[in-house]
Image 1 (cartoon, rainbow, N blue to C red):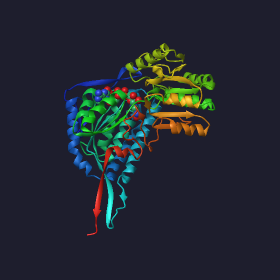
Image 2: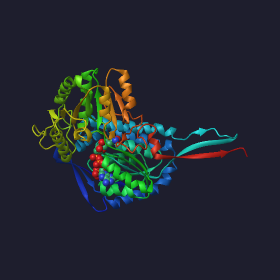
Image 3: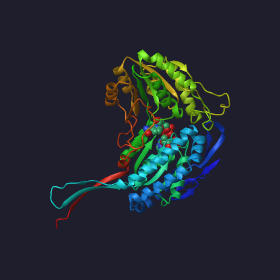
Image 4: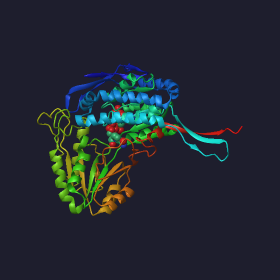
Length: 485
Ligand code: NAP
């Protein structure tokens, strides 16, 4: 078992209360994987204090100097890729292949932001008068809080930390209690890369206590959150009275539309990969396959074939293609949703069962579920499940499919499978989503373009990732210079 303390002011600190907790392997709950100091309000306050004290010094470094630290962190993570991927799998449950890709993505994020450090600046614009200059410059904000979920425990903290730090802010990061090891390993990498003390602080502890302290503290001038809509909305309200800058990226109920002309083998492969990959625990996962009625039966048959071929098991074992739910509560939630769907009239044509034979009895395993006959207004078609549960919804052509796709509160990612370029581009124009894919999985993001949702999936304020990630973490100052005298 690996033991961790919080990382505050450059030190590995026990919780001031002395409290601790352990996390267990979702594939085998008998195995305690990690132990943590359970941070509370006092620890969060100490972290904010350290970040505040470190800010002036860090602000006065240059972006390329900060970028060099990010490069060193990338190298550190790359060198430990195998080891970190294994720990990630043991704590969160995704397969070792999926975990390795996530660690690799983390390396790329730091490399991208390190390179970008040379470009962080402003604009020079013409002045009305001769011998005058108008220009803008970007400045860091101060102490920034980051609150992250468990489903991408290393890449997601990284895609917030890299732009936050390279911009010159100091940070308090609160990772999800379900899988905090990777966030603390990032802190270790930063410490080894020579980050000055107090610039990055990581406090593990409950959302209610540590999260609440960060959301309400006057010295926290900006907060970037990723997680569920309910929590994001409540944090947003805590930030509003002091007008702290807010970035809330939240859930999804993402559609993939399969049009009548689609290559059905491709469609089934993409929908299965986007719906059941990472056990469906992805914000951009396809959970609604909206299929032209003419090809619905043929598509469903192929989708079931794909679901049937998935090998569920411990993500460290060779040949396993889908790991467990992250914990017992998530598994129960997934199975409950299958029941709700059936009670509402859907037909369960494959899976949706708790798996507890063949060595799976100590883990949180289920077979991927395919439900047909789902009505667009049913709960299973409207509410985020965050598990491997696919609702197949039939539509009578493009317009109806689009209306169903948009008839929902969320708007994160969306895909369409078709050979018809005109329909594909109509979809791009009209779909209410922050990410649109054509003949691709709804999951998977390129780190060099902006990412964020619309509607209930986001506060719609600032994008993450890509070069524009810097916008959230900087403010722009306009400078008027007269050199005529
Ligand atoms: P969650 O329950 O909302 O938790 C997210 C984070 O918020 C955790 O660190 C949690 O801490 C903390 N938290 C909980 N209650 C809080 C409170 N009252 N005040 C402050 N912080 C609080 O979400 P999750 O179950 O970890 O993650 C799944 C959700 O994340 C899904 O809805 C998924 O769609 C979404 N997600 C969105 C994106 C995106 O980019 N849009 C990406 C990934 C995931 P504890 O762990 O200690 O409770």
